[in-house]
Each structure stands twice: as structure tokens, then as C-alpha cells.
Length: 438
Image 1 (tube, one colour):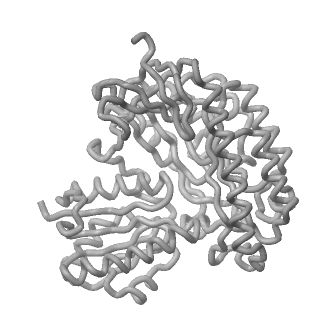
Image 2 (cartoon, one colour):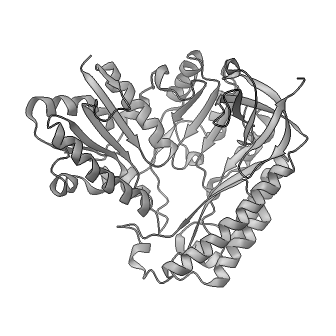
Image 3 (spheres, helix red, strand yellow):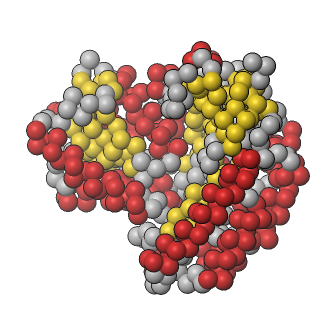
């Protein structure tokens, strides 16, 4: 064993998967994970810069980690992911105690970069975009799957949409899809490792172009022995084909929940965002999806305070929320991201107004979420058990196919199994039930 490593992860599920792969590569090279910063010989921050808050958090935490570097000069400190891609070698110039900066296309070089630092102690920064992304083909070791019965698979990375507010194309690059045969082989390998739920990831999965359509990829994974559930994220409304919608009616393993960001309800704001659809288009998609799968559950991303957004525009967003009745909304105040087109527009909605609108939206969404949950009371759902409940050691929790969390009394040996649970109580963000038949 060479030493110990700790990786902090910020942002999305794709970053969570990248961290699993980073740990796996380093473990294979002789480095063991630790939660003890005093014990760590390597510390990485795997970062997100899609919004201002996580970006600022990364910079703040780097400042705190300087303390550990001063106490342990041989500590290797690095930054990976979107902030690394965005800032590049400027991170090292601003924070000279940082040793390694690796962008989103260069994470496969992590063990190599560590060896360089150990040999020379000279800081390194690699942020070039490539025609392929080798890290996408790395399969995490079973020990780093969390929980062990759920596995994430990168099927593509990058984005070609250039929404006016979004930094993703600049930090993740253009869309690159993996060949469907590689994806299928990975799904089979993970199923053999015990993964029962496969979660497909990409910035825009329904524009997948790895030799077959995304709908065909779902159909083939549906046939993989050992896989019991399939989920995916993220989808763009403009690429939601009828073939893909039909999968929710015809594939028994495809879960009946969909993350479908809408960002705003105003047609004028949507056009300024370069989203490529109207509110009516989005609502027609919801109607089609509910026709294909009547018990469909939705989540989405939405922002308030985009430049020039009026009260009327905001009320259009609230109207859409009332029409769809999402289970979960990830809601944010607009923050300009450097290099995007929207950053050139005056940020003319005040901070106070953004906060007011966000509070109204989040208050109403909390009401809708618990109203949706109350409609599930008395019903029986298949729940895949994920772990021990935080509320009681005698209880476990899992998710319905809608992705709603359910807590119920049961032994730990239920983890990884799917059991039928009757819902007895609706909570603000979860359900409480009892195992059916007990």
C-alpha cells in the first residue's frame, strides 16, 4: 500500500461516478480511501461549476485545505472536474499549494500525474479536450459502488445545445457518445458484480449517438440478465422522441420516473435561454408521457431571475409547475456563468427579487410534493431497499420505481432486495410504510 486518499465530490451524479472511477484507479495503483484528512496523503476536490454556489464552495474549501498542506508538506492536493477545466493552470497560479489540476477529459491520467508529482514535486495542469474520453470506459470496482446494487454508466458526455446560461459545453466539451456495444458490455459486467439497478448518465442522454438510438439502447439493456431496474438522466425536452416515450409503456424494467428540466415557463425567457421549445411543447410532452405511462412521476430543474424575467414570466413558470405537479424540483436563482452568452446580458433582476420568487416557488413545490405523497397512502409499491434508515436502526429505506423514498421496519438483510411495501404515511420528502403481508 502506498498511502491514503480522500476525494471530495461536488455537483451531479456524473461527478459521483467520476469519483468512484478515480477511487478505483487509485486503489488499483496502491492507494486506499480514507475519511480522515489527517491520515490522507492525497486529497482531491472533484468539482462542479454549473452554478456559482458550488464554484465558490470549492474555492473556499481549497483555502481550508491549505492548513493540511502546511502541516504535511508532502500532501498531494488536486482539483478535477468542471472548475479545473474552467480555471486550468490559473488555479495553481492563484493557489500555489495546489499540485494537480485535471480537466474533464483528462481524469484517466490521475495515477500518472500523481507519479509525476512524487518524482518532481512540480505542479501539473492538464485541461485539453480530446476526441475520446478514456475515463468513460473505466468500470468502477465493486467496493466503490454505493449502494452495491446500483451502478451508474456514462453513455455520453458533453453538450451541443449551448443554452445561453449554461457552462457545460465549455467545461465538458462537445457531445461524445460511447459505442453501444461498450455500454452493453459494461451493463453485463456490472450486473455480474451484483448491480440490479442501472442508471445511465449523460448531459443529454436522449441525443445519444453511439451506433443505435437511445431508445434502442434502453431496449437492449432491458434484456440484460440480472438488471431489474433502469433509470437515466438528464434529458432535453427538444430531443424527447416518440420512440423514447414508448419505452415507458413497453419496457418492464424502465422506471416510471423522468428528470426533464424545463428551466422556465415563459416562452420569451425560454427563447432567450435558447432552449428550443415552448411551454406548450413541454406540456404536450408531459401529456404524451402520461398517456404512455399513467403512473409517471416527474422531476426537473428550474431557475428564477434570468435576465429580463418579469413577474408575468415568473407566473408562467408557476403555471407550468401547477400543470405538471412534479414530485421534485431542483430550483435555483440565476447566476451568470463566465463565457456564456447570458453573462453578456445585464443581470437586471435584483437579488431580493430572485430570493422572493424562489421562496414562492419552493413553498408551492413543497405543498405539491406532499400532496403527491398523500395520494400514495394506502397503495402498495415495489421498493428496492438501499440501506438502513437514518431514523431507526430497526428500519430500512429504499425507493419506489417513481424514485420516492420509503422508510419501513425491516432487517438489514433486505438491502439490495425488492419488497412490496404498503404506504401508511406521507411525509414532506418521503413515505412511511409497512412490508406487505407482515
